[in-house]
Structure formats: C-alpha cells, structure tokens
Image 1: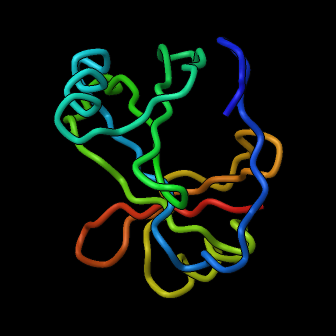
Image 2: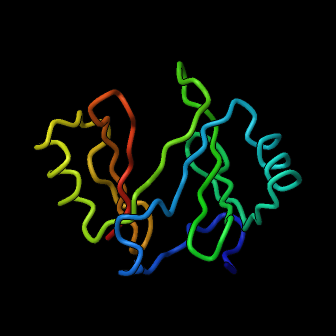
Length: 133
C-alpha cells in the first residue's frame, strides 16, 4: 500500500475470498512491541500506520490475501485477537448472524472506502468480525 502516514486506506472487496479470514485484529497492551515482535519473528510486513481515537492502528500483511491490524486494548479489555471474515455484505452477514443466535457486539460501521465492519459473539462466546462493503 502507498497510504501516507495518517490516511485511512481504501479497499476493494475480493469476491473469491468471501468466507475467508482476511483480517485479524490484534488488541495489545503494547502495540509497538507487538508490531516489532511480529515483524522480526513472523516476518509480517507493515504499512503506514494511521491514527484512531484510541491510538495508532498498525496495518500488516502476512500474505497477498490476508493481514490485519494491531491496536491498543480498550479500557478493561484483555489482549487478544479477533478474526474478521470477508463477506459480500457486512450488514446482511451481521443480521443473519444475530438471527441465528449470535450476540450483537458492534453494529455495522463504515471504516473506510469499501470497508464496513461489524462484530458479533457467536454461540460459545467467540467474537467474530465481518468485513465487506
């Protein structure tokens, strides 16, 4: 990506990847240390970070078809990760998930051009994100 520091990237959905985990969001108590460790140990490539109300969001890629971001943990949140599934329609996936018994955690929200995300807690307590137009 060629985004400059401070700009939010845009995204074009890839139809062949619907249903795949294409973004993993990592919540860290020390995002810079996590970023450095992932680059050194896992070989992940990082692009320009961009600011959010909670701090810098560090985008990474581990392949041409997947990556994610590292952010600061929210107050009271334990460090961890959430897989985001690439879907054709984030609102439709969210509605279907809630209708099938998932707990709504975050309603669909447009994050960038071509990217709307939503978050549910699937049966069994597992957080699952949806990402798509």
